[in-house]
Length: 436
Image 1 (tube, one colour):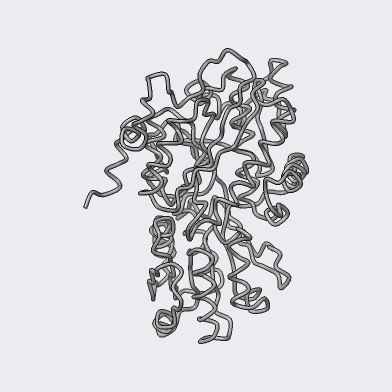
Image 2: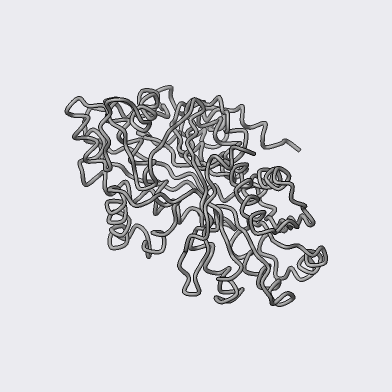
């Protein structure tokens, strides 16, 4: 069977021959934004994430991130006069579906600004294809192959899986939980994160007593639960889709009604993931045993109220149902800030073309002598118009991209109150993570 990873070598031009051949694309159908007779043509951000299937909850979360920033930018005049439109591209959590969907989107989108994504579900397959077409991507894909990536259009502002796994293991060891069971979905997104988790377990000298890879959305996992409990774990590391988590851990609670700590990867700080999980386990027990390790939420800064106002405004606009549920997730702030960052890079570059503004992303993000610190898109545009060099600091705190276009710091351990609100239970510094 032809392996999906072989498709990484293909460009969108090659893929579109089979996907949209009737369109007879010409060489002028470039992935990047091209010149136009009008200075006010709209430009497009593509959200390349799963919007359906077991991982569909991720697309809803990323939509909140992007729209909150886009509305703010558009109200401030757009990017160099261009209003931004947003187009979801459903990967369905499967590279086999993602590749033709992205190929068609790129080939049929005339003024593509940048791509928000791809995630871990299809990042290894999609990132080389998107890069070949010279499109900037702000990706949350956690695979280690991106730690020292050679893809010049790939940017990542979240911790790689190995860092997340080490942070989870550090927190477990602090609590003297040394016997670890892993429960991961069989989907590519979850499986892509698993090696980093196992690396963390080994690095901290913990013992992996059970390794369960479960198919999504099964009616019951009673036998798998019994097999796991027989190994007498002290803690469970997990990543699955919400429905699978609710079924599995609901049944685990039936067989083991006392507290057994559960530590989730970064997806655990997404409200739409946590809610069904919590309902199945029960609010009181869930508050005692659930943790999620994610990107550290910084202390509030002047960007925080701007972000919160922009996010909440997406509700009345009909773009994001119940946006308030995303306020407590640090990932929402990170995704929002990435959009603002790219818009400011394009503004400094005086171009909405990826090959041009790609070189300006680190310039407006990283600290530097004599730079003016700005906390909003409007302030950044104003400073740039005055000829100043800027450092944008968003609600997720400052960036410092390295030569591999990676920027990340410490990790935060979130718990959940009986009422369903996220609350910080601990932190793991970047220095602690790097020591392993």
